[in-house]
Image (cartoon, rainbow, N blue to C red; front, side, top):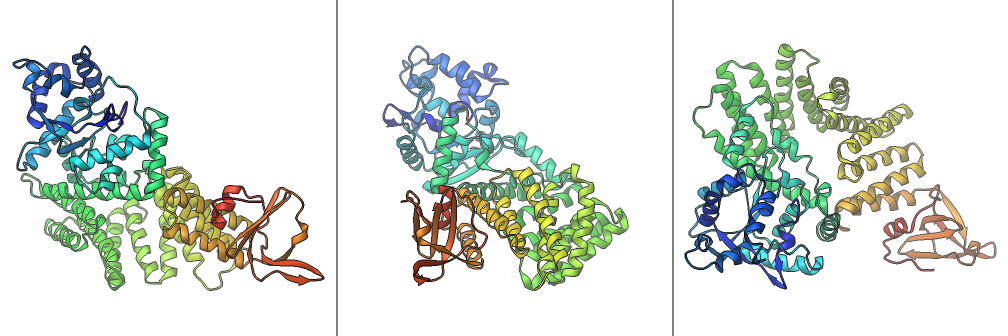
Length: 578
């Protein structure tokens, strides 16, 4: 939420608020105060109307209404045990919020009255502070669990404010944790805009927006609220996991809306073909590959009947991508469809057109999967030239992905030559820079890029640089995922293997001076010598060499200055001891 969030006001005294305003009373409130509501956000309605009406009593609006003498205007409003929690941002236009809820109720009539848990109506807005966060969050979870169902309102559809507000995302996190029913809704005006986008020849706008959702960057009015929420998410689920849950649920919702758009009457032939194309992409992204294939084949058939070669080529490209996702047995069929698409588009648009490059990039991907690396490399390089010439058109991430793919191919041979390794290094560095530019320094894709860079640096013999990239990658993965996630486990295993393969040196036990310390866990040892740390793998038990006890350890070029946090992570320690 912007401003004081609904969730932060779930307590009144020490008791949870579980009342809801009836759907009919919400509409009556809108009608009673329509002139005052026009053009106002929900936050403004709270400040200018709700707080004014309840200022004398200092009660919540629900309490104010239920205590109004019988026959009074506000005694007409009905409140009862909430059965639908409404998650929204206070920046939303209030009338659009009500319209969205209205559309949801019409589509989901249910078997009784909806009582809506909407913060400004059921929580006392005159209480500015919240109790301690851990206690309060537990109460909020029990409240949401008792309500049993949550509705998330998305405004605007193509860049929802909801996805940029810490409190809204916290509510989604809690709803997922409680495993209650989740629903999404957009008001009719936004649905019309969404359908217009599906009908346009501009690709699937929402999928591009959804791909960039990063809940770690969500905002709150108060930094302390944001810090509490971020800490809770990192402790329980990690941001990358929550990101994927949000994107998955919202994609499913919009796919349903897109399929509904296919049944609309009055669409022109071109509009219907574009809707088919975009619906197929939604279906592919949520994993409904059989449905996606059927939808895109219908698009291709309509395009052929209409004699629209470009539309047919776009369909063939989508079909190739869908077949590629169906697994290795479909790779050759995918290659054939993508090859047909490239040829049609090149003939009409020219070989250097951006749309041709996009299809060629997908063709290169399937060629790489078919181990036709030479052809794939040539295609990727041609795509890169075209994309770099159009970087201003939003192709930064495509450039990063292609550079990573080129680097992978250059490293594929059993014994890559020096030139190929250096080219691969340059490609991985370029990809890393682009991903940081798009997502910031702590995104999963940045960590993957650093892991790739570490691999080529290791093959070049630049062990210290490689290890530093692995360490940076490990920190990012630990920021985004739980300790047992395969990304975290795999990165630390790479660090272990890296140390094991380093050059063998000997560190004498008596080289430690007073005040210096040594610790070990399993087969990993860390030593502090002066202001430097040695992180190593033990290769033998302590042995007598030249009359003194020595430890044979694998360190190679791993001598460097590491902080205590790094040592804890590398060695799996929770404390450091002298």
